[in-house]
Image 1 (cartoon, helix red, strand yellow):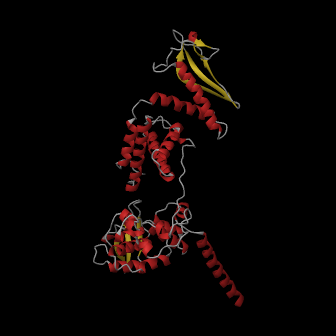
Image 2 (cartoon, helix red, strand yellow):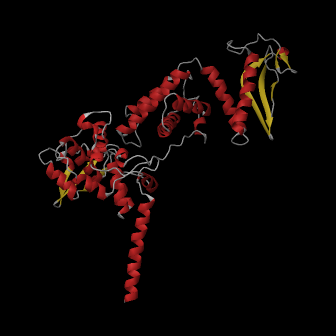
Length: 438
């Protein structure tokens, strides 16, 4: 176990005073750390490596200097032992930990730097854009959420968040707070950290700070791959043909959901189609709009069922069922077991979507329990991918920027892959047999 020592630098000034240094040698490394405290050499015990007069205080007069030395020694050894679990720590890593400790002590009772929250507000207001483009309402909501989480952390811990003390020590404390106090999911925490980093990058560009401690490789939080289901075309059509004539509300929810399954839009888009979004091009109907989230222009052809839905609701301005909130829509899709009457059982359960095992993370759930408004969009992308439609063209509708992100989004099971391979084998062998026969 390495030991921590304190020593004095050569005295300067009149009366002479010396800077106190911390030193620790370990595994061929030498940590030397200055923390800004000075003392008269005559008041220093070289043998004890402490101040002779216990009444000597730190420069701000708030703490005993010997107490500070004791605390620094403990913090240095604690940091070393914690970092050792990941390998022999670099000198700079230990210095960063000691800096965080000193900043914490200096800033504990200081109010939060308003510039951090002011910069968040400039993002939230839309003033700061992404390469000249407006951020989507959904993205702005993420900035608002992260700002709220950061403020709650500040209020609870009195950390005094500012651009200069956002470092690894802050990261560990913030993650712990988000998990234990706010009970946030891994994906929400990962989103928080990404948003915070975006704000910090802009702070450096605006010259608010030169702090880059948050660029450390460990200042990251990984989300989890979410599990989800999709409906096959056969299931979608069976759902559409189910008779809901005795409950018009469920029928309208079913029709709008099926519409979403065949146009591939997000609920915020497919539930708010306007008359001008339905256009005729060379005698055929298309959906043409700019998506709310990405502002991308998409043009989607209408299959026979979409045309049938348009005809069914032709007396409505947008030829679709009346829009309701996403929460209400999902409640009608899944049902609400806590509600009595007709609202208790939802569209998908009534239509017989009761297969178990479709959600790998919870095979005990029936299919209807795994369905939400977003299942429509995922079903569209997965079904067309399985049909062999080019991925790059599908991405123009889904808005995914990379094929890797798109493939994470769709839900292709091992059975789906096996079936596709089977079809490929059949076609390949049919071609070979024809050649043999000829």
